[in-house]
Image (cartoon, rainbow, N blue to C red; front, top):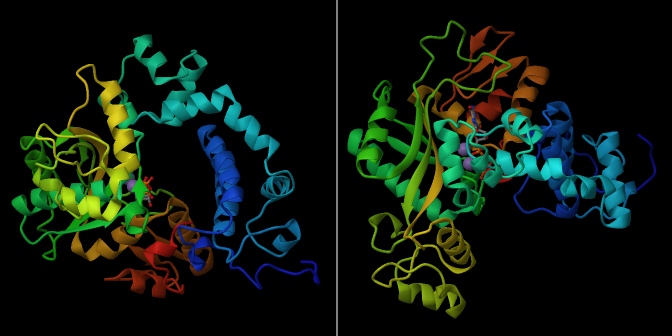
Length: 416
Ligand code: 8DG
Ligand code: MN
Ligand code: MN
């Protein structure tokens, strides 16, 4: 480190889990550029490169002020040579040549479009791209055999690529709660993922379910799914039973970030009607909406009875447009929403909560910190201390941070 030049901040710790990373920050132009390169690396299955760009972006997100010149970056961690070059270019020219080339490249656009189909990963998308399939429509026409997830992904492509709003997440939460309480009274449902970190929109809605009496939660998911299916709330679901019994390894096996909880990847059919009981949250009446949001908000979908719908304003227009154009039968009164459900035993709840709140980079950094700085293994199930050769119990996220020797970082500051 060269002395002398003014630093943006005195010192910034190098692991994202040691820092506060709010949702809104001061360097979006730079982080947007780096995120494109990270995404491109991930789509090209170059994970290491992707992580390097993500770490650089996360560092910039945690800075208390806007970076105006490259000299302010001296002494900061996480900025590799490539990231620094991109940052300097954006600071000097406003854009990065590499980012521009990437966003305009046919391959990047096609890979994004194809992996934007639920059930399609980078490998599959790459294979299709090389066969000349660049868009979901190309895929539809190709006659390829698709699995159930991909069929649903294609069918609801436009809708699933519309952001899910907080209001929609809350509405889904009420349905999930009804389902869970119908089959297991006393169970607890927690909103996790991006919405728990304070995001106003998401690509899906994530929930963690548990019950204070350990063991009562076993086999819960199939029952919840049956209830939801019987009520017509599910357009698609794939449930995986828990696998901690079959596994011979300890619960905190390193290296894999796939966990062994009962889980369900699903697509919900969310009513956008004011008549449904599930959408009563927050936006109570048409009059309430009017007075709070003014005239501009009242465009959007209307139900058969002509009432204002839960999706309002700009978002309603987008939903309306998508629904109106994707179906020959014209606009309809529901939309498809991706929902992830996870069930955890009560004793593992804090670990599951921490592991499923994200962000993905924050999780990765927590595990890296645990292994490299503390000789511990962290998973969504447990924390194992390799020196003391014992599992460390925790009933709250705060306790886990304490075990790890980290300052507690609240969910709203885990947006690395
Ligand atoms: P978004 O939906 O708003 O786009 O963002 P998000 O909520 O942060 O992303 P997500 O893809 O829904 O993932 C939420 C968290 O769940 C994230 O921290 C990663 C974590 N997660 C998975 N799959 C798995 C898994 O198999 N095991 C564990 N432990 N965590 C997982 O997405
Ligand atoms: Mn999510
Ligand atoms: Mn998810």
